[in-house]
Length: 390
Image 1 (cartoon, rainbow, N blue to C red):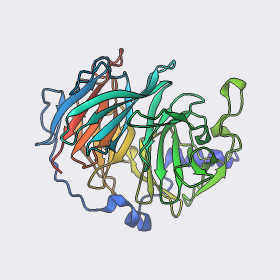
Image 2: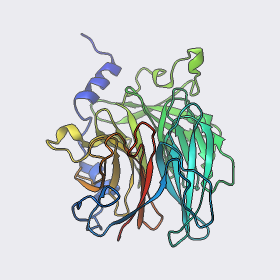
Image 3: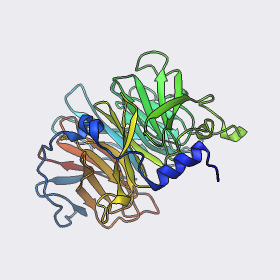
Image 4: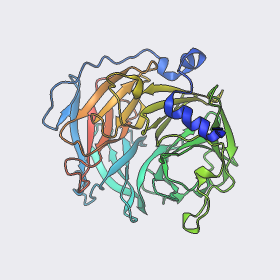
């Protein structure tokens, strides 16, 4: 039977990597830097239900439905279903941790916790309200948080981590089931993942230099199944209305590459890293050459340390930190050879998933959430802080 190009590409993606990570791509990836951490194996479960390396300390900073404990009395309740997150510096020398709320029926949004430079929690507050399914997103180099709606016909909202400026809808970034976004400030692009079983990888180029996001060109990745080189094809209608039966964004270009459930995405030193959950892969795209490769494939491991790949970010030593949705409920460090090392494991919360990993600006503290905590039905998430000796 004759296969169309789209069917052939899907077959290749499902049954084998496009290209093994090696050669010049291996040499240029930021993950090739020698590790500066000396973290040991995970110890026994502590009082918080966490397994950590020796010497790493932890605390709970927020629990869904409860007021966040701050220096001044606060009535701000932490949101349910905490998801993607990021940290931002403050003028006073502290930082802000932002966290999405993956609730639906316009009960989503994002909240923030501000820390003093000694780690004291100063205040907690909302930065986005009345949106839907805010899953992941991405921090921008100009200090805003892009919050993504993971719903059919969802949008991206640009928010102010301080809460002083109102959030702005960014329709130019497309209307689809958004998962995450990463900013390439070298070439002036934004890369976006789509959480569908046949989702796509997108690239946005603004009409004016960043941080301008009002208008621009949205393109979809079309991958050569033999060479792994990505070509970018413009999307004719980036904001289709699903209620009017308009063609979904991912189906507008027949040669578009289908990825098995796009999840987290991260830009670092000219490389874009992203995960696909349905085939348990971590990908790397060289933004200079448009070469795409598979960095990690759980199916190639006899006993994979990392599975259920989801959110990700960069660790202070240059490795990727990948969160597990299910799996062993771990945050796992991944180096340039695909070697995986657990950093933390959450025990007794099998109905949950790890979300929102983000390091403080000095790299000494790590924030993340167990999205549904111990009570999965009520989605009462728990947000943690780890203190690391880096």
